[in-house]
Length: 193
Ligand code: GAR
Image (cartoon, helix red, strand yellow):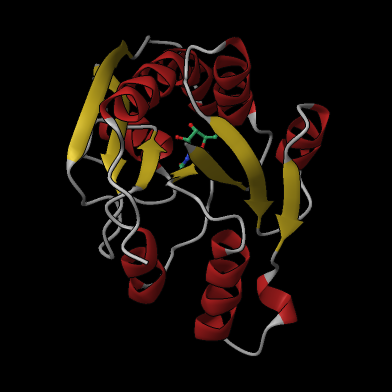
């Protein structure tokens, strides 16, 4: 099974997936990793021997054109499963339709609470005592797709956004790896291409 992952940042979630694919815990190959900008996640992908590509919004006239270019770049690697691993841009309905239901994301909050780009900050500001991470299928509405797995993480009294996010990410990496391993073992539904 061929996996393409998309990242925007440090790529620690991606690293967990790369390690799990390398060890055989995830019985699939991460053939390529794409990003919306140069980032550490791409360096991690290259170090693991995956192909990389960057499709930057600024290089395209508008968002639909960027989405189409990203879709073409992902499609070129013939994925059976597309994983968002800290990819921080919203994908349009056309992109989602190209890969769903084999398009999966992980989000640093217990959905349906705190969707969007600031799930950790929003949970902290709301004063929740328990938050966590959610692995879910991607639909055009932001963070609204079928929930595949969740893990709860305590919020400590002296947490700031960084400390809380790091605690979430430690649990989230394990959750994502386990969930993807199960999806692959079950034969993840292929993109309708
Ligand atoms: C993860 O917590 C992931 O859930 C989050 O970005 C982090 C990536 O960290 N994604 C989102 O918030 C998507 N809306 P990483 O770059 O160290 O893997």
